[in-house]
Image (tube, rainbow over all chains, first blue to last red; front, top):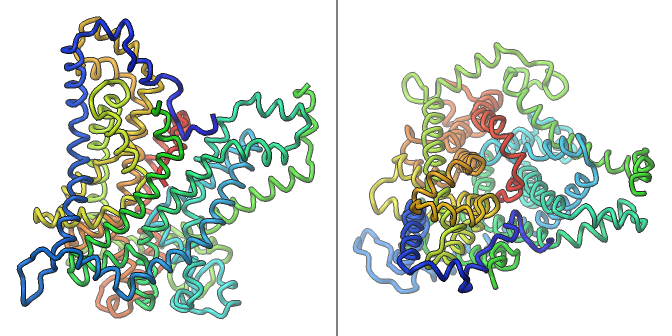
Length: 326
Length: 307
């Protein structure tokens, strides 16, 4: 059970149908053709959208990435080989943006995972109204996703009116700009923002995994004299290992594309922060500040390859897809 | 035996007190800023700056303040203002349109992947899973280049169409038909002489209310809060912004962060006004969340939310 991710289908799988069975054998190939034709008709709206929003943009990004950027002197684009990739990788900000992401990841990911697992276990150990209302409260910031969460944080981070004003004053900050530009603060602030908005959703996910543990297992352990702590540490935790891996990888991939928070924090710090603090911001700058579309495309491809690698790990290792392997 | 032991565990042991205290502590950390933020929308800027209004500013809330703040938020924009309402409408348009498109595409696709045999079925499922777990911001710049190539940057319809591609929805629908519609039901319908499309419309669709609700909900929430896609595609056209990037423009016009821009405006957007605009922008999500709760709590599929 524990190795199956999320809501995997129970046992109604394609396996039996692959073998030449009596009912399948009776079906003629024209029937199969009709089934496949029906399938493709039903799939067609989705396939069109997959092409428009996925396949074509990626293919086009590859085309663009291998062109030279048009310049005032030479407005014609031509084949540039790996030139745009060189531009990106040798950009003085390129390595910095990844170093910045890592400075957030090393603080945020461990706290995030411990928080998710700890709170999910606490909720699972609290049946009834109390547990479910806590789970609901933890989920609320997740619903305030994106810009709304950001404005909430502007309220918290501004020493002039923050409810944690005393905290900022004790640290010697009197303006939001001072809070943000202090060099070591940014990874901490981003960690706090990401925890606040991400914890609840992931607690729900891991809690779903805990709910999949059969009651008999827990009851048997209780009869054997396990207390709540033993149950959590020796029974529940090992049984949700796959879910923890899933949460870790998904959050890692999420970390690589950070954009909104550093982008908007720069805005409320009167542009005192680096404009290209994360890789996605750098890609955005290539496209919208330099109008160097080949470099922007190359940057997207680099990020796509990184997140694709993590994504493939998720798909293959989590059992999302594995259920169909035979 | 186990039942007989239960009441003892119901007592207030040290472990239980620690567990409840920890959970309440975390809940407090979450609730306080949200309460203070909502109160901010009901406060007066002079008091906010003076730091009066008491604990979390709850002492200074009044409806008059909201009326004033709304006049400022709604007054933002060229001429008579009204940009905020326009942005909300744009968000509703692309959010609902994208969700409808996502449902129309994902429900039949999930059914076909779950219950029909065709070549490349596993390949399509695989691509769906991979696109589902990749953060969607990664594709935004390539999408921008594509939309730019057809000269539609600044238009709302490309945003709506792109939002309609919702692989997580197709996966939810796949799981739904895998778990609720036995293959025997499809076979029986075939024996009854129904065609493949008729089976989908007459047998599968009537039992997919739950899946439709979930796909519509998750897709609308994702569309409403999407920031990077509208930022890349719509920033160039102030009238066609969505509320997420509109809020960003309001922040940028606040005297708190950008005195030079704010000095040229008729309206003053201090923290109460920004908090009001943000709170109003969350109302559609709140309404939807209350409406969809019945469906959200029933299915364990909620656990599969994309991070």
